[in-house]
Structures are given as C-alpha cells and as structure tokens.
Image 1: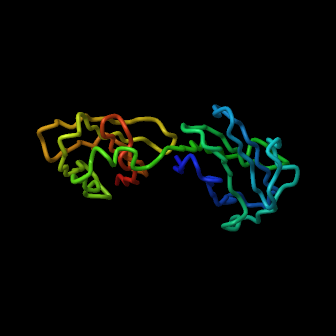
Image 2: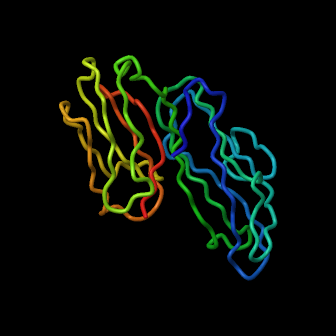
Image 3: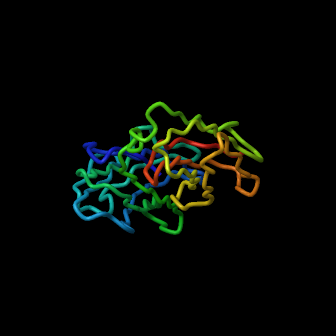
Amino acid sequence: TVWGEPGDTEIEFHAVVHNTTDNAINVKVRRTQIEVIDGTQNQIYWGSLLPFTYDETPEPLLIFAGSQSDDGDFFGRYSPNSKIGTSTIEYMFFNKDNEEQNVKIIVKFWASPEGIADEAMKGGSVSDIYPNPATDVVNIDFDFTPEVESAKVRIVNLLGAVVKEVRVERDKNKLTMDVSELEAGIYFYTVLINDDIYKTKKLVIR
C-alpha cells in the first residue's frame, strides 16, 4: 500500500527486480488494472516512462544472473487527480523468452487526506504504536478530547487487506492488541477517529 494526498500530482511505487536464475534474462513488465478509480491515471516506468495507455513495456531490460535492476529502473506512477480512494494495480515482471519465469506484486495506491480528524483531536494525542517491531502484542496510548465519539485501530497487510481491527473504548487511555497470529512481515496501521483517518504508519511484525 502506497499512501498519498488526493491533491498530489503523483504517487509512486518503486521496486528493484532480482534475477535469481543462472542466466541473464530480458525482463518486461505488464500492468493489470484490477480496480481503478474513475478520473485517475497511472503509468509504468521501466527504463523510460510509458504512455498512460501502455499495459506492457515494449522493450525489456537485461538483468544478468544473480544481479538486479537499478534503484531507478522501475516505478509505477499514479495520479489521483484529487480523487479520494484506493486504486489497485498488479505489476508482473517476466522473462520475455519464458513468461513462466515471473513475479507479481499488487499495489494499492491509497489517496486520502492525512489528519482529516485533526479538528476532533485538538488538544489530545495518540502515540505511535509500540513496540515496533513487535512479536506478540502492541500498544497505543490515547488522550482523547470531548469531541472524540469513536476510535479504532486497523491493521492492513501489503496487499491492502484488513487483517485486524479493534475498537478503542472511549474511557480508556491505552489499547493493547494481540498480534501474535500475524505472520512476520511489514504492515500498516491506521488510527481512525470518528471514522476519519487520523494517522497511518508502518508496523513490522517479527
């Protein structure tokens, strides 16, 4: 999941491609627009920036055995055009001469105004999640204002799927969540105040 403001000119997802085969391969990229918000645009950069209409790179990039693409060789660019919401796009990197050699990644471009709940929390506070990285449990400390009617914490995986969501009791100043059932990896957690996004940050589970 890649976050950005709806008013941003562009939101970018960057990736480095590793060639784990024993041979040099010519790698191409194919885009599948799974669910895209009307009025937004997206395009591929693979050595050069392609037009919005291109779903596949016309030219491959050569990656030697055991090597990888350069940091700037690939990015998916998303232009929200002031539209709020999430667009989901799959990128498949594949061997031009053997398409069965491929890897896919699904990216959710999430355009949402950060701090939309700031008014309700003026004079209050929400801590970052801790410990982070975590193994069994995580905690968040709250200092609510009278304007806060509801609060919850949502954890999503890298595919944007909600894996855990817990409502915070209004009269409590601390939330402890059990995360022992989550697989090790990178997640994002979002604190929602009055059903509006207050903050979104990364969470690492070991």
